[in-house]
Image 1 (cartoon, rainbow, N blue to C red):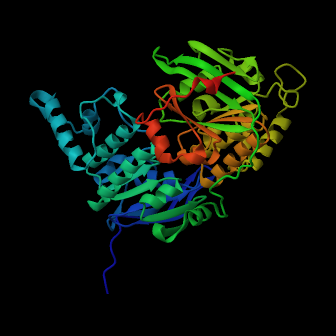
Image 2: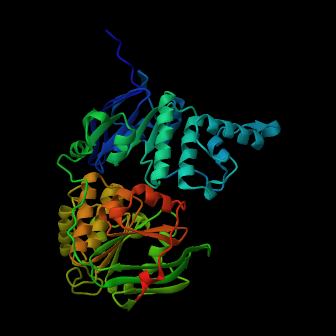
Image 3: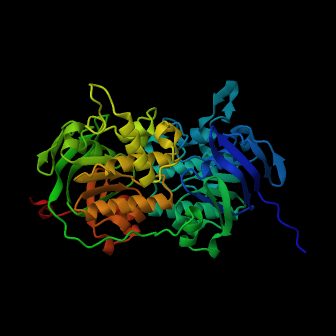
Length: 520
């Protein structure tokens, strides 16, 4: 009889409550040494909460943690690091104006006489360290000058430098190209071969199948199952996560596109530093079609959308919406022209976090007769709450009594649902959807994609901006690829691949569109 292997991580009966919300209810997790273990669940299922407990950012109300078979009290990230646990957060924790080497050694810097920082020694050490793990970085480069993929490598190196044998990654592929994802997975497999244990929080079923050995599924704070990934299908994982069958692709009716609603010609836009980010962009979005803009974050998408929606002044060019000139017009006029927007930054642009959910649902409509009272400045709160509750039910915003809660009290995924619900329900002529499913679980993604397709099938125009190439290929009727502020390709989703799109996105393959494509 063989002796049972001691797991790298074992969490038993973990409970965690925030006020009236039971975030985790007697959750168990067992992670074998030298494996890649995915943690899967709906929005608010407790994935991040469980990992924050393991990393010492939260304290469990009850339960126990064993690391390599030994009971452990992890009351802070330092305690986790001392136990050889490292965590790479979804939003990187790097000092932008420090070099790569300085970020990696921060807090344990080698010094020479009188405490002077030994920069040459740091650079040499980090160069050798990065080579050892096959993570290609230039120690002298500043973080602010490198790509997102390189920053991620730096975060992994930072954790390994502090002795991590157990590595937690939170949504590690969120803003990477297919090529960068392949490179990351190669790194993770290499780390696994060296005996490291890796836990990935993700909602991307395809990537779980590609890289993970095991997957633990949580649902509403409760442990559902742990499975060997090679023994289940993506559809089975989705069903375990959501508790029902989920369609992983979206059906679209074939319809004839109508008139060009959004017309952009030769648009140039600067960022806050007066550096050009959008360089001569021209595009059309017609009624009855979904046009997707694919590109790596930071290639001008944000500045383009801000210019269209009136949040940023363009330098030159033209923008019209259903024949109405909206170039450099205020947001109110853009709204009146029938254009609504799901902004990519839900905190800065989508919500007032200290307003209730009910208040957030009518941010753009509170002056309408249905929601305004009889006097100036008086609101019809009964109607507002009733309307909010109808959106909560229709879009499955959780918790079910969210109307009276502040927006900041909801999970990121449920915050996103508020925005999607508010904008879609206004029945716009054209909807700009920027990262509409970011942070959503597969059940919610299915719902949002169906809503976007329903808008398209009803003759509306959809301008989709997404980093998720499976989403782009699933939803788009046409794909535009943006690189360094320019549209470098127009692609047919039926005749292209993620690999080809990724090559355009990274600047490795460029194409020019004919001027005839934009004749009036």
